[in-house]
Image (cartoon, rainbow, N blue to C red; front, side, top):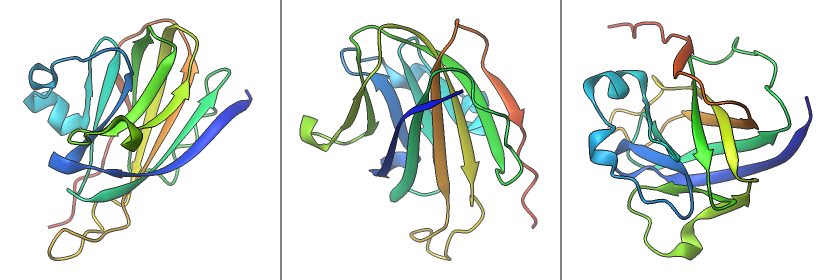
Length: 161
């Protein structure tokens, strides 16, 4: 397994979410966020993936593109989900749901076809009293793979309280 590309981003997670999606596709996210997908912190469309966040602010995100499935290194992560999506245009973007101008969107090229994305979450319970600061962090690992079911590879332990 080789890492082909890595991008470190800070994404404005307005409404506690951001997206990885084919640049040419505009899917209706209202139907994808259900009680189940909110609980999982992941909503999946055909050509896009919605990632829920712990806070409604700028959040750190690292996206890496691999040539094959990355090793299962779940130790430090609190929650790990995996899903499939399809790239049609050859351009993928990572975007907050209210980011307006195309210049605000982080883009990278992926050959058209099916992909798998593993989303790993950590620091979900580290928010400040006002919910504005925290050490939450989101890692997206993307690689070419046949379409498959969405799955949770590591479940989040219940928060103390």
